[in-house]
Length: 92
Image 1: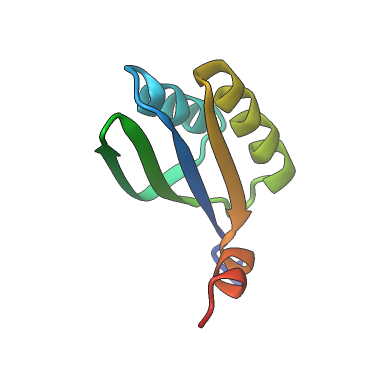
Image 2: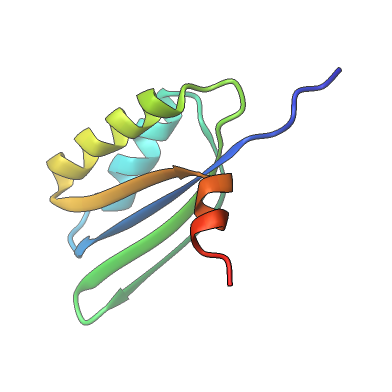
C-alpha cells in the first residue's frame, strides 16, 4: 500500500536581499525535500514567498528547526506548517 503524500507550506517574509531563495532551496535539497511549487514577490523592498514541499517520509520538526536556522541566518521570518494545518487555519 502506497503511503499518502504529505506536504508542507513554507512561508517567508522579510527585507529583500540576495541569497534568500538560494539559502532556503539549498537547505531543502540538503534534507532531500522536493519543492513542488514556489511563488515569490518583492514589493517595495519587502520579500515574500510561499513554497509547497513534499515532506512524505520526512520529519516535520527537523524541517522546522532547519528553516528556523536559515531564517535567522538570512534575517527573515520562515514558517513551516503541515498542509492540513495550513488549510484548516485558512478555511473560509
